[in-house]
Image (tube, rainbow, N blue to C red):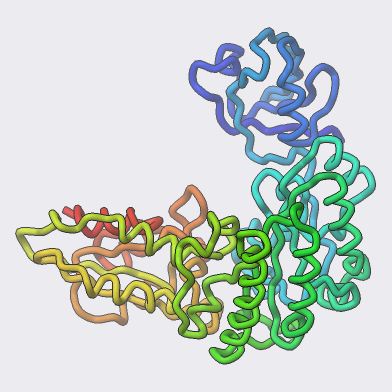
Length: 435
C-alpha cells in the first residue's frame, strides 16, 4: 500500500494555500516517487521545480507543478511525521511502563513505538532491535544524527534477558557500527534494582564512555512501577538507601569523565536525588542539560528559572488563596519556595497529590491524573480562590490528563478557576497576576 501524508494544517500566505490545498488532503508522491515520512518529503521538496501528487479528501488525485526557491517551505503540516506506519517495539521488556497501564485509556498510550525516524525527529528512545539492513543504510546515507538509544546495559546476555529479545545482545556491535557511520548518540539506562545496577552499571558506563565522542551523553533513570504489574515479572523500587548508592557510584564516574573531557557525560534523573533526600546538582553540573526531556535536571532548571523572577512588585488589595498542585516528590521542592514568598494578601497552599491511579510508588508530577487531582482537592478542606495545575501532566498541546479528564473538569469539580503553569516563570506569573 502506498504511504500517504495526511495534511493537518496549511500555513497562511504559503504555496500550499495558493494551490488551495486543505487539511484532509494527502501527499501521495513527489516527482513520481512515494514518500514514507517527513524525512523523505523534506529531501523531495527541497528542489526548485517539482511535481506533487495530491489526493483530495473526496478521493480525487491531482498533480501540481511547482516552481519555488530552493528549500522554500510549502506551508504543510502533517498529522504524523511517519506516513506508512510507526515501527512497533519487538521487545518484551521486564520494566515496560506500557505493560503496566490500566485498560480504558486512549489508544495512543498503548503504542510501543521503536522507530528510528521518530528518534531522529523527536528524540524518542529506540532499542535498535528491529533495525534492518535497509534502515542502517538509510541512517548512514542521510546521516540521521543524533539518535537516542535505550541501552539499559551493555552486557549482551543481560540485555537480552531484560528486553526479552535475543537480538538485544548485539548492542555494542550496533553502537560501534553507528559510531563508524559518524552518528552521534544520546543514550539511556532504565535502572532496575538487582538487574542492571552495581557492577553491570559500571560496565555500561565504561563501555559507553569508550565510544565518545559519538556517544554524547548517558542518562540513568529509575524504573517506574505501577500497581498494574499483574502479569509482569517482579521488580522493586529504589529505596532511599539504594538510591544513595547509585548517586555515589555515578558521582565517581562523573568526576573521572569531567577530568578527562570537561563534562560529566553521565547524568542521573531527578528522582534519584529526591528519593535519597539529596540536593540536586548545581546548574553547571548538567553541562547544558542534554537530556532535560528525560527528566534529567528539570528540578535544577526550574530552580534557576524561579530565582530569575522578581516578586518585589507583586501584591493584592484583597486576600487571595491559591492551591498549587504537584506530585508527592515535587512537594520537597515547592514547599520551601512557596513558603518563602512574601506577596501581600496572597496565601499559597502546596497540594501534593497521591497517585492512586498508577499507585503510590509513582510520585512524579508528570503522571498525575485529573481524577486523582479532583479527589485530592475535594479532600483537602479549606477554601480557595483558584488552582494552579502542572502543565507537565497534560498531553502536549492540549488540556487533557492521562485519564482523559480536562483542566475544565478539575475546575468544575473544585468549583473554582483552574489555570496551568508549565514551568517556573509561568507559576511565578500566575502567583503575581492572578487577578
